[in-house]
Amino acid sequence: MRKLGKGGMDRRQFLSTTAAAALMASVSMPKIAFGAEKTVKIGFLAPLTGEVAAWGKPGLDGCKIWADWVNADGGIKVGDEMMKVEFVSYDDEYDPSKARAGAVKLIKEDEVKFIMMLGGDPWPGASPVAEREEMLVSTLLPSDLTPETTMLLAPCEVHPIYNVTGVEWLAENKPDLKTAVICAQDDALGKPSVATYLAAFEAAGIEVLDEPIFFDPATTDFAPIMSKMLALKPDIICLDTCYADYVHPLTEQAFQQGFKGQMISCTADFYEKMVEKTSKEFMEGFIFQFPDFDDPKLNEPHVNFKRPNDFYQEYLKRYGAGEWGAVSWEYASIMDLWADAAKKAGTTEPTAVLAAMKEGGVGKHAFGEADWWGEELFGIDNALVGLWPVVAIQDGKAKIQDFKSIPDWWGKHSELLIKHMKALGQMYYQRS
Image (cartoon, helix red, strand yellow):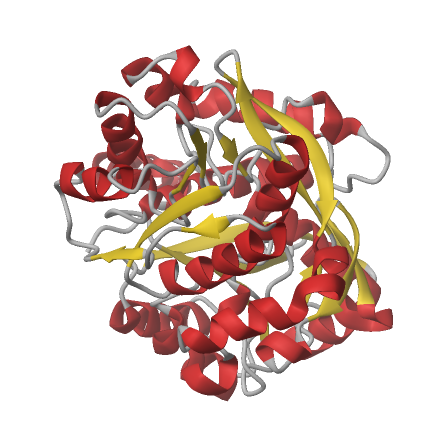
């Protein structure tokens, strides 16, 4: 199993550094005592390799920028101490057994005070360990939440609930589009997202033609799937929350098979490559939910993410153009919430940080003040829900079209979402 090394030091560098240290130790020098620098370790337990790595590795890269900025300013003030932040990563390869092993290592060996996960299929492996050890864990998938997951939070991404905002905006701005088809991989990411899109389309008065197509995650040939979708002659093709490795070939197949209508997807990671393989004209108006952080709308007063434009430019500088993805900023935004809570609590102990984070029932979500919510849908108010951006590609570039309110949609259409979640067995009491 591949693990990322701290700071990228390989064995040769380590040996040469060790040798140099030994040489310096043999030289007679005056001894100077320095106070030990305080450090808090944060666990990063997510897929860093494999087909789901696009929702793990870019987030770790973003956390490195966050840590460098925070540590350059002296760290986080916790009580009377300034503490530097160190990330310890473990590649769960989107596998429950590896997630369990990773949780044990991060908690027992590395002594982390907080663990960030993508969530989904690996969460059941880590869950018993986290609950037993009272470890605070974050997920990007609120569908992981149940009344029993008391130490699990969804403080940033509210997947798949935010997908309603893209459909709502589409219906308001393109009311002539009346029919849609949906496809998704058959897994813990795909199913709740399909339920959400079904509810959103129904609320918008858009007919979903035939049953959603669930394909095996091992699928490599997407031509037949797209052919089946296009045979229904839809106005809208919905790619649900397909992984980047699926969104790209599905989009290319839509282009090659002559689709001229609207496309909508939860994500469009590395969309520049899709533009290259299709055309600017084909990708014009492609709707998804994740902005580039050079977008000027992210400088509006309600946005809480710190220096978004600078963060984006630093990310491109370090990792290259075209590497920015849906999760590049998300784990870093979770760290803003965690750091604020640790300051408020005066400690990094998980239970105290959890209490401080949820104090008052509201929190500073990346896109604005939001409510701790979710009891009706997840059995627990551990999801931070508020505004979410609707993004469309215009002239080959992602641009925020609007910020839409998830609570407002829920207030009008909650029964639809619950109905479709039940139908696909995705309510918390069905999953647990």
